[in-house]
Length: 511
Image (cartoon, rainbow, N blue to C red; front, side, top):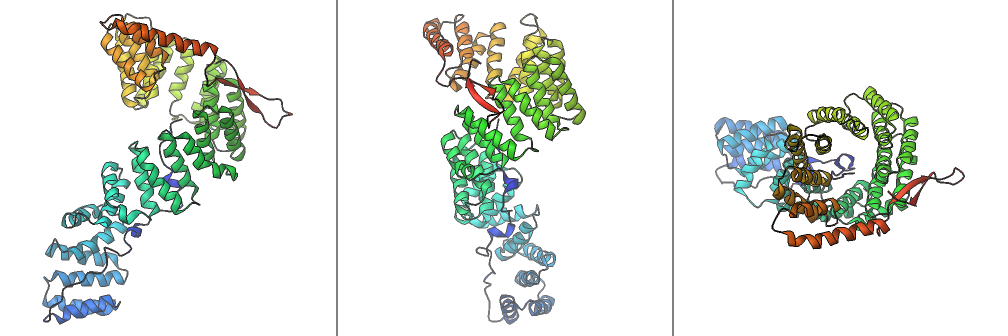
């Protein structure tokens, strides 16, 4: 299952806007006093000593004499701030800025109020301040938070880096920083940021979850599980932690441990859905469809109206070619949630299993129209179209190519779509394009047998025939390994008699 997003919504530390200030760079301004400006000095002293009412009274009188003095407007704004009247303070700050656009104390005061109120006008004020002081880390930090909250992560990351000196102990700002890095697939860069968060508060479980997630996505499954292990050993029942740990274990071929973790998650959270869906996916990948069906059926006793469980069970029934049961489940899924995403895809899968390709194509077309950015639906549409027995240059064949290309544009790692596209290019006589797709697939996975096979076929029509013997030897070796059993043997899930303490175990078997 694809996991990338950090759990910002579960953080125990809600972002407090004022946390970035600490009145370091944004303290009271040190106004330059002149001997002939005694009223200005008196107002400044009143503000700094906390006599805000007096400061306001003195400011009124002084402004009647000098209404264009931006310093007086700034001091009165500070007095209003001291009296917890931010609206009045902001009005005076903005008036001072109109009189003197580059007056930093007024800009800083206005920024502080706008920022704490999450106003959209805070950003231009901050950018103005940054133009006057380009290396101010506090300004960079505030801009970074605003950018992160508006999903402008490229700008946010640049500003967070420039603000490193003021955010090293700010959990909320660091979490936003890490979230942006993750959204940009910069998992390695996110790891030290998340490690810092976990160090600042080891008791925040979501911090360790986020760190493990980044480590796993960065290709460090052992480190990821090591991050989660103390919580697992302590008996944590959090479904997200347990399902992530299961995904990590499955990615390292430790299927028995993954099953154990998912069962623990289901037992601890019988009325939440994620662990059931993870178990169904695991069952499907190991072709243990009946075990997955049994687990989902147990889930439906707890959540009889949960459409996603019906849809998942329907897919497993379809893979078993139990079509009446599959279609019944799809009907129930639609009854309980007519807007359920991927329902059309699931029904199309069932039609494909029944070799009803026209019906499957209709379902996939509807799903693509409903969810045009779903790579899986585009791929399945291309696959169903490719099964139609039409001439290689027919409109269906061209539509299949376009759907496969669209799927890869949405998800370049969807290897099924890449291999399908290579095959479609071969059938259409587009040898160079087929070779290009095969080589991309083999760069990602040198043991991709389908890509090797397509590449061998494609090279026969080129002047690169000398490469074919070596590629053929590789393909034969890979197929031999498959026949005798690879180091990571495929496993089936099997039921265990009830007298055992477990209901599911793992047994080696052929896929």
